[in-house]
Amino acid sequence: MTSAPAPDTLRAPLVVEFPFTRSLGPVQSAFLTGLRERTVLGVRTEGGRVLVPPVEYDPETAAELRELVEVGVTGTVTTWAWNPEPRRGQPLTTPFAWVLVRLDGADTALLHALDAPGPEAVRTGMRVRVRWAAERSGAITDIACFEPSGSSDDGTPARDHDGTFADPVTGIVAAARLDYTYSPGRAQTRYLQALAENRTVGERCPSCAKVYVPPRGACPTCGVATTEQVEVGPRGTVTTFCIVNIKAKNLDIEVPYVYAHIALDGAGLALHGRIGGIPYDQVRMGLRVEPVWSEDGRYPDHYRPCGEPDADYDTYKELL
Image (tube, rainbow, N blue to C red; front, side):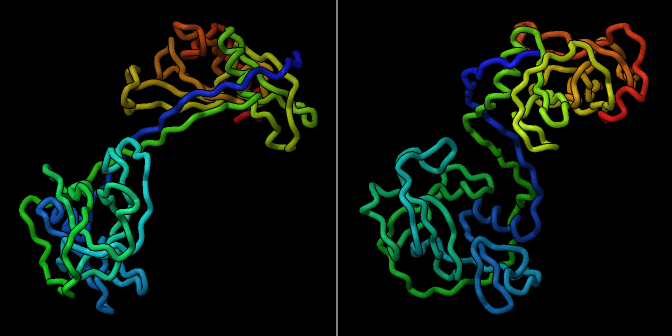
């Protein structure tokens, strides 16, 4: 065990991305299908207000809403904010204004982008109109953006609409993505640097003496900082496990396979890892395993049986 000097903290760009799939009820289905057909629909509440975008339940009374109405494609900016640096996936690639637009016939405002040459060209109360996308599929992006309009608000009321369209949109897939810079901190920087040397290290709590792997920089039980570095493993014991039967996208591992909690020798906390080198139905609690390092040697690719007898339950029951 050692108390190493503080390393330079690591930093790296990280992207979390996944497709979010949801089905649509009758109101949202009609709204998105209407956009595909260049029609903007809202919903009328029991109190007579027209909500755009439409919702399925009255935000004031919680009553179910089904009375669809068509509103205009022109409207009035109620508030706005200038976006000087558009990001990936935003409606426009050049600077634009985020605007809330109350479409003619609606009582609430719709958030979207306004194509304008600069912030001096945008003002609350200005009249705008929908610019439709050239190709539409039944999504909010069927409205490419808003653009300035010289029209006036003539007070045209919302018109009843049955919400019926050919080939209605019944579900959507939205790509959720988060780009950020991740810094693992002092404790995990040491942990990652040790992995690059084919070693696994944790940190011991000065109060309860538990060794946490991966280290967290502080003991979650005692709430005190941890600085004493302790090398653990490399062998360990399977405490619990699960069999994975669904193949993950972009993960070149055939199913079924086993993911397990592994208590490395000398550690006071089990970490997780994949079990290989053994049929999935032969993995068991108490199985003794050792790491198999990745081709670049930077981390354990998986753990395999090391040939030792299974560990007695009493030796790892506190780590379940």
